[in-house]
Length: 233
Length: 110
Image 1: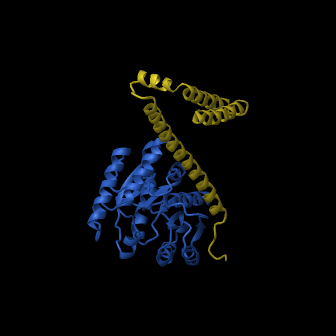
Image 2: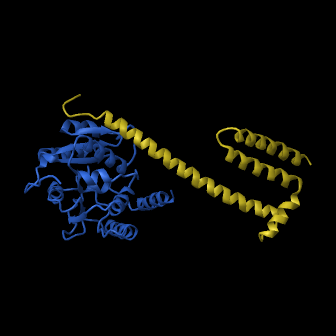
Image 3: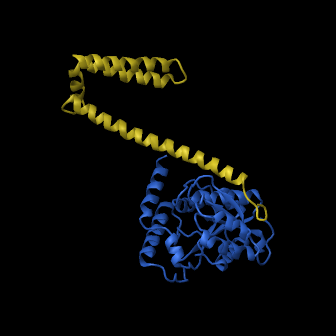
């Protein structure tokens, strides 16, 4: 392990932000992270709006999928690029403004202090998620229990896009589920590949915008189908 | 009687296709194709044979047995096609990812 300073330098962190049609928010989200001194890779998942141009104008490195592949694929693309550029600490961050930079910094700090290879945010630990719709809370809880049962990792919030990982974890994890099943896949790989992980409480900002862009409960059936077909292989 | 000739003709073509596969890169597949098509010709000329086989495995009529076997075959094909699609999915993903990273845009350049 590399020598650890007391607090981590934001310039060491690479933020990977997968984005699909996030034009209205992307410049603000990427801009806030960039202002803190960290590097930002926005993976434009073949948006039909000007997401890529806005992210570039805000100062982010932009990679654009030549076809739409899904959020899992976008995360893996961003992680690959950051690794190629020598990143030692990678943070995954949502493009819709629902994550707080302060939470990301705390996760990054935990990884920097080598308390874990990967630190995952949970909206169900301590900090009460405000304004979370009851139906979504139920669906997320069910998803966490399902992930716990199938992977054996005691997660409380499997579908939280806010994570920080060191280079070792980023090189070890390989997301192959292109759409949303990648969240459970990631937890499974943490277990299989013996990564040290921890969960920290984070706050999710539920705005009208993020709710509109977020997962619909009906999609959980698609996720289950994806996972099932993955096991068949 | 006409149907017997039609089926025999068609199945014979399949047997020939199997023979061709036999001498190319996939001799096992060729053998399997020949065996299945050959069995088909046998059943066309002796329909009672299918019923006798059906009775030994506990099915009343030969036609029913064929329907069950057909169902199993289709289910297997669906799974195989799905697996193949997933393979293609992964290939496309790797390809698209590599293209995307090669063409990464840096801030400040236009």
